[in-house]
Image (cartoon, rainbow, N blue to C red):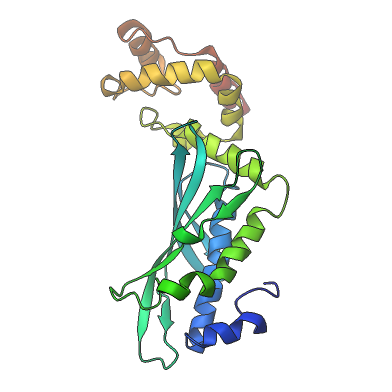
Length: 258
C-alpha cells in the first residue's frame, strides 16, 4: 500500500471520526478488493464476467456487467459488483452499531471520445450493507469525500500504464466472442489460441454463430463448435449449415498436440 492508502496517517484520522479502529482494516481490504477486481477482470485467460479472487487471506466474488453505448455499439462502462465471501462489518466509533458489508458496487467508464483513459464514476460507487437505515454504506452528503481514497487508488491502477486502456478493450471484446448460449462447450475450450482464430476469421465466425443461434433449439444433441460425424451431418444435411473450415483446422491442430 502506498502513502495515500487508507491505513496511512493521512487518512486514518479522517476515518477515525466515523469508524471504530477495527473498521479501518475492513476498509483497507475493500480498497485492495476494488483494485484487484478490475485488474483480475482483464487479466483472466478466459473473459469470464463472474469470478473469484483473493485479497490477503480472504476471498471475494465479482460479477461484471458490460454496458454498451447504443449509439455506437461500443463499450461505455463496466459495472462491478464485488461481494466478500467472509463476513465484514463496519462499526461506528463507539462500537455500539455495526453493519455487515454485503456488496461493493462501482462503475468504470471511458473518458472522452479519443482520450484513452478510464475513470471511476463517483456517483455510482456504493458500499451496500445489510441495514436498511444504511448508516455506513450510503453516507449521503459525506459519502463521496469520505470514500475518495478508494476511488483514487483504483483510478491510479487503471491508468498506470499506456496499455491499460487497450487491455480492457481487448478483454471486453473477447467477452463478446465468448458469450453465446448456442455454444455451451465454448467455455471448456476457450483459450488465447481459439480467440486468435475467431478474430482472424471474424466475418465467418459471426455468420456461423448467427445461423447456429437461429437453430439452436433444434441442435440439443449437437456440439456446433467441434461436432462429431453425427453433428456434422445434422448441421449440413438437416439444418443446411456448413461447418467452417477454420474451426475444423483449429481443433484438428489441437488434437494433434495432445
